[in-house]
Amino acid sequence: MARTDWYKDMVFYQIWPRSFCDGNGDGVGDLWGVLQKLDYVKSLGVTGIWFSPLYPSPNADFGYDVSDYRAIDPAYGDLDVFDQVVAAAHERDLKVVMDLVINHTSSEHEWFRQALADADSPYHDYYFFRRGSVDRKGRRVPPNNWDSLLGGSAWEYVEALDEYYLHTFDKAQPDLNLDNPAVRGEVEDVMRFWLDRGVDGFREDVITFVSKPQGLPSDVLGLPGSRGLRLYNCGPRLRSYLMQFRRDVLDSHDCVVVGEAPMLGARKALALTAARRGERPLDLVIGFDHMQADCMYTEYLPRPFSLRKLKRAYAQWQDALGESGWCALYLENHDHPRVVSRYGSEAFRAESAASLAASYLFQRGTPFVYQGQELGMTNVRFDSIEQVPDPQAHAHYRRVVEGGKSPEDALALVNRAGRDNARSPMQWTGEKDAGFCPKDAHEGPWVAVNPNHVEVNVAAEDDDLMSPLSFYRRAIRLRRLLPVVRSGRYHEFKRASTKLYVYARESTWSRLLVMCSFSDEPVTFHVPDTYGDLGGGVLALSNYYVTDAEADDANQLTLRPWETRVYVFGRDAVLVD
Ligand code: NOJ
Image (cartoon, rainbow, N blue to C red; front, side):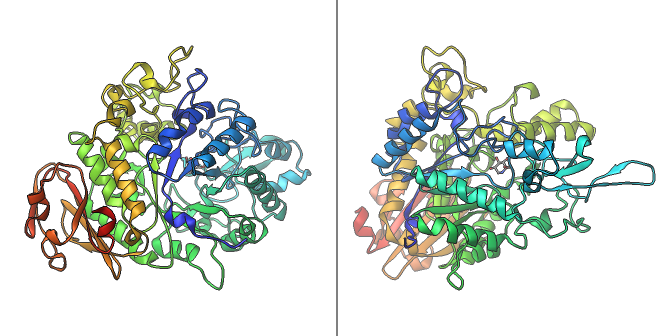
């Protein structure tokens, strides 16, 4: 089947199932809840759903530790209700993308159990088991110096085998050995299993980590904390494995392949998504550069927010990917705190949610919106580390306390940087439990609800024309309407401004000008000369009431706090007039 590029016209909504909607009243989100909310998802104007892992999992990493690739976690439902969700989504013209976690399994996966039980089992070579050594003082030394990305060594010793196994994440997530053709065969079978059930593609978790260098050498140049990463990020056989998956499975299905690619620069993203000699390993890449405008590499190394850093990252990716590459556009997912609390302003919550939305939704690429982002949900503040579910947060908390800081400081860092900020229950109503659980539920939600649900919720925002929810709906509709957004060149103005982000998309017949204030104060703005006065265009989107006179007035305007406006010029303007 010929490969199509429908994904370029898509807008995805990401569902992190545990916190989206609890249909059966046990306090945990599930697929019955998803079924109830598909009309809501559709109402946003999105065209597809990415489900974070639904597979059975002991939840050492909340689904990213898979113990069975061919089933649904009983907490979320079963294959029958999954099939119903796919059918109901398709009835509404929503595509369904599954998460696929193949860098590692859970340590409770049957393959790993067998690998541990018997060094001669074929499953032993599904993972990286290696002998360590003993130093002069008689202490055991792991096979190399790689770090787990969650802290400590990437190797765990197994007494019974007198061997270590590799885990680039938690020790409950042993790395799969994709150099073993049998493992690649298993991955292909898993892909077929879900494609045959009707899914429309995969979001491949840390896919750029799956090819480890031959001999697993120590990393003498890597920074402590991420030693090894340099060697296996975009490792030697990554391209060949991805192309094998294309040839053997994906090319014969009309599906999309989204690759998560931490620490990958825009040039490498281009190499993975642009066709070269008929090969295109991935359709689009999830990059991270723009998620570091207030931190160094990870939110756990915080820095003050810099709009210029954000704009540089945006521009680097837009410019580098140009006409041939393709990327995911996003500001939130289950791995990052809420963007209003990071890059926006909680004091101007609704306004900044909208300005941030416009800052990325009209770029070149495929937008993703994460559950609750469309409401302008903000970070949660936990009162104690015991309330925080994410093991990653606990690892950082321990590191900070062991480094001599107070527990209060460590908790403040977790509250700023933690992933649970994005994993609190979706806020459906202002009622008890934010309407996340059914009214007669026996259990409350599995994790604390953000107290601001009394104001920030779907029911309250639904009929409010100035709410983030209404803005997202209008912005998504506009994006899908305008051909210039798919193909126009990216051009940025006011690069040096620390208060404004202004960009344009330009094609032969149409132009789009997007202005986003990132300031709690009014900012005066001179319209670029090439756009003359704005009266030549149509104001297609804004987050404040703008009078006709204000909309057309001259070539200088004062944007109110976090104001955003989108103007369309030329042929596409007819579509919005
Ligand atoms: C990326 C996922 O998005 C994240 O949640 C997970 O912890 C790591 N990969 C490891 O699977």
